[in-house]
Image (cartoon, rainbow, N blue to C red; front, side, top):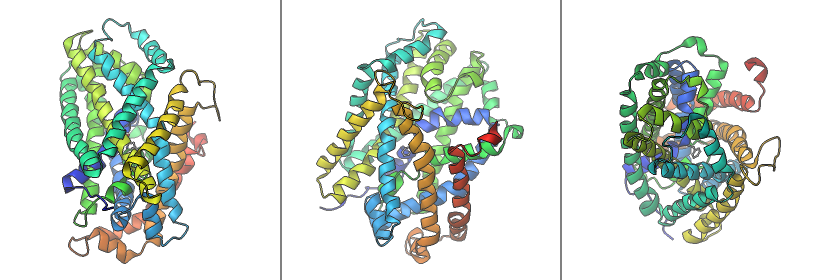
Length: 459
Ligand code: PHE
């Protein structure tokens, strides 16, 4: 069967940006920025993107586009069947593994969009938001229902194919996401007292920067750019020979960073508006599903139409961001099973979907009926989250940089990024230097940090 391609360069960039822009941009980046010295953190983060993130992203693009195969196939072909092929297989596994818990949060965003749209937060006392969230996730049925719906949407898009499914949906969803983000940021910034939120976010405070800040920035950059999960490699396998790899990577990273910064402009001005301490709003789920619904109601008028619109759009934004990322993760596994086991796309996608339904449900139930099932003191959800984020992600990133920097043929690398001499690549030497020396070393540090090796310094 003929392998599909993205129909346009714009479609290719939007699809990859859809993978990158996800929950991480909204529920982690703004808080990390606020707590780690504002603009100082942003500057360090951007340096991490430039020095580490982009070289690895370009390498993933290159391996995918050169081989036009799923990530496992791509690494097998490009490494001539040497043991480096395992890096590709690991990428497929990591993407699939992350998807199992990512869909659970995607489902929560749907529920909160629904609650916001039906004005369910009207008149809710501040201390009750935590109960609302805890009761919801502990319920055996409701989160599972949303989970099936969320996975159903992913499945639908994937079975439509690369062009009519992934590319078309990205072309629709990414502009929607930009517009909502800009609208919400403008609304939040025009609230009374917003300037303190803006200051909190943008004033560089270098005194807060420590070695941990740098490690956090690196970890966040990798997660946010969707590195080492097979996503970028798989999407790039649908790029055509004329797609400029480095330029596309720069575009994806720029979109991802801008959305993350704008998410900060949505969150902090509202938080300061109601006089809340930004250190008390929490991170991740606590921030998103406990603090923010309350912040929005109070900042915009409890039960007011403005609060309904703002809150609904915010959770819808999260939903879209999570959906496009989840689609990219599903595609990694779908491309793998369809190509490696010679199945039709429909069959392959269904197989992947069934496994996600089962494991996603287990992750989802780990907040309720399965909350007692624990390993290493973590529930099933946290096991999936921590193992993929703390272990698979840095390990994969390090192996990709070593492979691209030390093993991959330099001429092949240069030919690919210059599109066989059509484009200039003045950054080539820096790129190779980063892949050979800077990235493996820096990621090695993140890796050790994630495993808790530096905890004694942080105390
Ligand atoms: N980049 C996504 C985010 O910021 C998460 C993700 C990681 C998606 C890896 C796909 C692969 O939320």
